Length: 535
Image 1 (cartoon, rainbow, N blue to C red):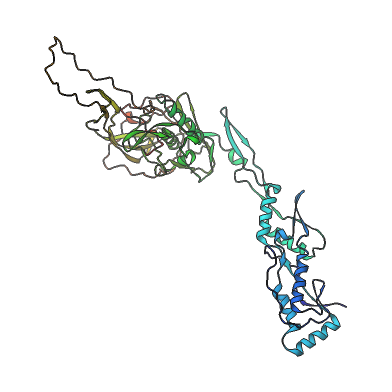
Image 2: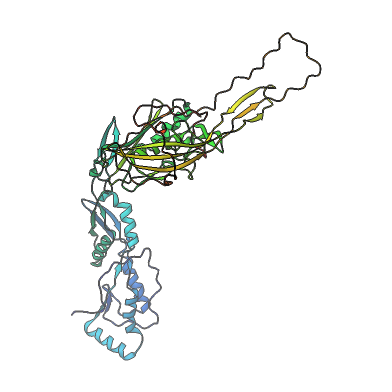
């Protein structure tokens, strides 16, 4: 005889983790009539509390059943309990059973008579927990499914080498959870096997995208031949941390984020840097030359300059307004790929020269040329030197601790020509560089004589002691070789301004060199800003 179903439904999978802790559903001492079952368990003659306990024991008996999740040709095993298996329709069962033990006596009597004739089955619904399923899949299945592999690119011996991309598959958590629910709804008398639902995933960087990287978009080389071992090391270490970076369209590279932290543990040494108008020793001193070289490369590649600040004082390795400083997070060089294809940044030191090159897909016309012209607008005299008395020195002795720095104001012009005819002349930014006094250590004043000195035939001529060399690594070295460049210009970076009214056109001798030949830069008595500390 077919039994009447009191609480419809199938074993559904909802999610909840842990041991069943809900309070009993039934109260009162009335016994359930014969013929009532739940999940195949006979509840006739039991009180509501006893029926509740029997159902819980029935659900608990299924918690340790083995569940096998198949992913392709591999599989992982767990238990129903570990997936948060639990009794999910307690309220519905309680309502159905209550009709037989509580309320109107006539209705209870009629229900009991029906049970005697037909019997009734109360459906016990169970479920697993979505969060537990997701955790299980993430911890045990992600590697089995095979994540998508991005293509990678490196430059070896002047040639690009690409590791191809590969599509992958990922486990669909929600669909897999539903499949588990359906399988366990059929019962857990036997181990359950479920095939995970997977979807195909695409790599972020494909082989085809990286194959477009073939052309030199912009390059720049600066010289650090006068730098000592510590500063040279910092340039080698810092540039290596940027070398090989790939920027997808719209992505931004921060020089500071690539190179920091400036610590000995991260490979840096102590070298000279600018701080508050003075040259000081700082871990990572010299990395501002990296920022400058990257900036000039970006200018000729016509990338978007997202952030750039000049040094507090002039540097010797590039012309004014062609420099960029790094100091903490408030002075940084950030460049953004405004091309429709990826770009590759190459950075290295060789033979006391630092080189940055941007590779990508050239889209600018071959007959279009761009150059950048530094124009000095005025100078500021540093004034009289500062003297610091050093009592350990001989009276009248004098030693230079820091050279003077002439301040100046300058601006940078971007000039574009097509077939040799000028089509654009724009001021990118105007910069101010502080003046700084020379600093000397001097011995204490000589004590006045207590008696007249013995006469001498010829008094010795006063001579000033030999001036000491500047702090190691302060001289930035000569010149900058002009970056190579080719065509169409994106918008100028932040800080651009229109040319000042009636401003004279810069003279050719102020232009940055436009060939790969090394051209000496002006050599004021100015140390190179070496970064690492406030510029």
